[in-house]
Length: 341
Image (cartoon, rainbow, N blue to C red):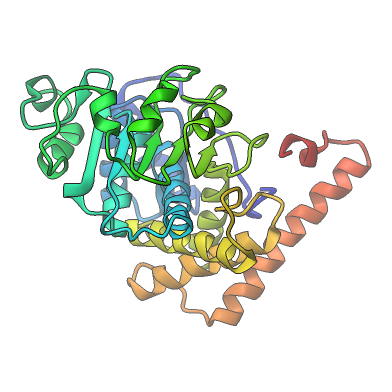
């Protein structure tokens, strides 16, 4: 509501049964312009999302996967620019193989990172074709076993980080999940995204003491917050404005590239690789980029010009912020600005 001008209705389901969740969403879908799934465990979340995306005529979105991945990709694009490395040449290590990490890996590959240059490491070690524990139980992990790790790495986190240009961690909260000395094993000018909350896998000062050039977290009290709140409000604004039937990976990439471009226009530094939630115009531009991609891909029910899209997004977002500010000033709700500091 505050960031994207989207009216939301929270619906809590007293079930963990995938079939019941799917059936409930199907029945509710005609009443909504889009549905965001939240806090569904891995691996159920993949099957639930895939089936609902196929069956529903409105966008169904799992923010823990798609929203997180979108903002991480935006940060990765700009981090590589700061250190002067090309996406298609960068060696990337993903730490963790839960829903967020798998979605991040997929979207990074769709954006331009090469699968042979990617290494994914879960709690049992590097994903590779010898991981029989993965093959039978986790098809999404097994896909990464088949596609990634062109160097044939074996071992654990230490071996996974060796020679990496960028490490993206969405795993166990720290501190100490990533030992500081492992940063020494990375390539020159290493980049680390440590996104576990409330405590990142490694503290920023620890990473920088060992040569980290660009560091990002999921927290607002450190620079470079790569948080899904920079993604899903604007993405939903864009899809609603053109009455999109779905949210494709290409639409997520369009959002990520626009986020990256907004930060670049303002001026990239090692401590500013993605915009912040206080930058209202970023959400407007991101919504327009998503809507345009939806029209380009033929999943939009409405066709609007860029100016019409911008006018609509700007009106909805600024109106919501104005109403929120008025309610805060009058004491009806808590100060949202302090919540986002």
